[in-house]
Image (cartoon, rainbow, N blue to C red):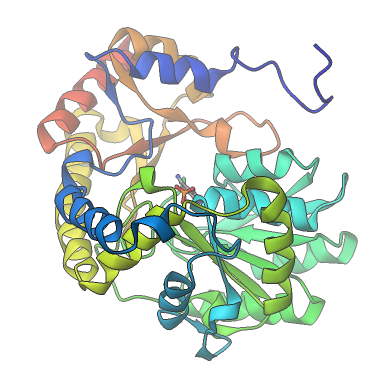
Length: 386
Ligand code: PMP
């Protein structure tokens, strides 16, 4: 078949193999990024959908505005500051998950061969979204707080990217957080060079330690912010949003019109209904409590079963623990042994856009109980010993 040149051979990839392996009921998968199934507010969401059906059923089933349900857009605006002032409804577009936000940004901003700057490492799904629009990537060196402003400035001397994509809170995959001072330094550099920042924040509310840090979009100019209901409510709802200058929102709207006309109208209204009941703050507290227990269980099980064979960073929030396999060259090499032991992790190499070898692995702790986490670590230790 004459597929586009950039398409890879689908079905043969590593991710497909991992997904297949994860179907095995005996498998303990630390590879996904799934929120815990048993914590979804299913009944409250059901009541919200029911109310929408009863009170606005016809309108909710009709075509709707591309930028999203106006009440939900206003709610999102009411939760955010942009450049130290309240955000406006016209600065919000509702998307089909923040993954669509990434894709719309790529389609709206990138010409083939344009460069996108990325953190090292970064979210695989962003690499995939940008790749679809033939982006070239440059990975900017990072430390435990993310992008190093000096390194960014060095890179900007040679290359003018369309934007820098980053995840300042509990980054996927590294779990790291960009501190306030670093955010300010980064904004100083981005403002000096007129660099557009794309700030992706799906995990910000899942905080287990420390105080919240203002978003880049709150602190400075020229920042596009992506949010989502996937991690605080449920990913199957597929509702996220982009906050940006009105002109950018209008361009994204034009792109979105050609992609899916609008995100699911019924779901947007049901989420708004749920939010009106003010249930979200307590729900987030519950998520923090349970995920924190699971995070601790993973840290302790790693210490018990893997000891100094693993060097890890304890994340202060989010869903992932990032660890190095000591004395190992490439964490890919052990994946088959792990599948035989019925345990899965994501090898670090997948989070680098330059195809480098990595001895790192990303482990998800949110969707396994402490008992399962412990058993998974036993298996991981056995896999390494083979
Ligand atoms: N950005 C990051 C950093 C993510 O980890 C994810 C999901 N794993 C997404 C965006 C996409 O989330 P969604 O489309 O469900 O909102």
